[in-house]
Length: 445
Ligand code: NDP
Ligand code: 2IT
Image 1 (tube, rainbow, N blue to C red):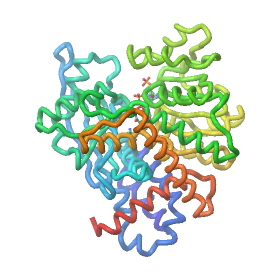
Image 2: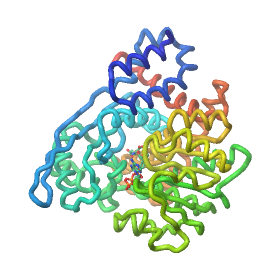
Image 3: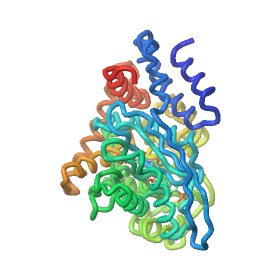
Image 4: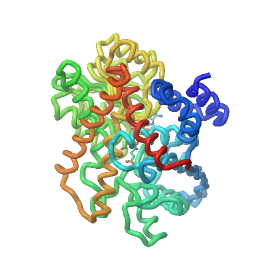
């Protein structure tokens, strides 16, 4: 049996019921076959793939907190410190009722390669909790965040592990967690990224993931026939941090974004999304996507999934994992969609990705496409270490360079293995090469 098949088989047996982790490991290892085959003997001897797929450390803990009625609740807290081969663990915290160990492991595993692609010195980690921030008061969210950090602070630090936001974690949650970290440790240091601008946050971090996504797609379009966003019809799923700033940048580049969604359904606006209105509903009022259609005559709201039925030229899934399956992929193609890029982590199922690749639809995987967020987090870390704050333009221009560089590395690696245009293989190979080399130099650890 090949080394890759052996590892995948063992991984499923050793990590039962971690479906999302199996899926992400399969996606990565399948595309590394070509690299592994060339180095099989040495990789086997060094157990390189066993070490790569086993987290350095998993911290799992109890998070008790008190609601506004005095009722005590208990949530599960996690931090997976997956790989420190190229830098301190780095990756977001997700607060969503679906969070479990398998989901945090899949996200941490993806993060290893994504972070390597940025070219910056950051290892892979991820954390979170099954706490649901929806419908909670600010005080309840603070109580949860303080309790979560009361345990987590023992394991993180500016040079060891630097968490950030993800689903359900934005500036409010990072602020509460930072305050508690500082109180417990007495350290004012860059231990979290995505901080507010008054206490060490970086300009452009809020916009970074969405902007970075659009920058890399623009580069991919340019490279494939000299195309761009101008006058393209774009559908973006989700309406959180990534979706909103992807909408903003795509509109700036002349695209018409016609649909956005949340977990209740989607809105279609034939006139194009009104950015101020969606920001007001989602960022200020923490409302539901339906309120957009209630407020705007040109928009209609449809309950449920189904956003991929809206015809478009470019589709940007920016909500959550496995939100776009094979059926959706076929509908997108039938409606003439020619480019897809993952703003979310693993939003497309393996079958959908294979379908895009087989049908010559341009496809940029999340590891490359959404790396602008974590890259800008690393720029926030640099500013914190230097005790400096760079301007919006400075950070935005560095972000753009990083995204163009990720495209170049991804494209180069795909070509080197005779897989030109397969950016899934390119991103996985380029990320893996850096991490594997660092692991080999550092001996068995
Ligand atoms: P937010 O919490 O800001 O927004 C998440 C959006 O996705 C919301 O509109 C939410 O709807 C929707 N959503 C979440 N879960 C589901 C679900 N199970 N079904 C349908 N819709 C869902 O998160 P972000 O925008 O930060 O993150 C979105 C994606 O991007 C995630 O996959 C995240 O891992 C990834 N990502 C984020 C980065 C960042 O910097 N923030 C960086 C790189 C990747 P609702 O409100 O109804 O739940
Ligand atoms: O998935 C991701 O890359 C993030 N949620 C951002 C991580 C970070 O450390 O900024």
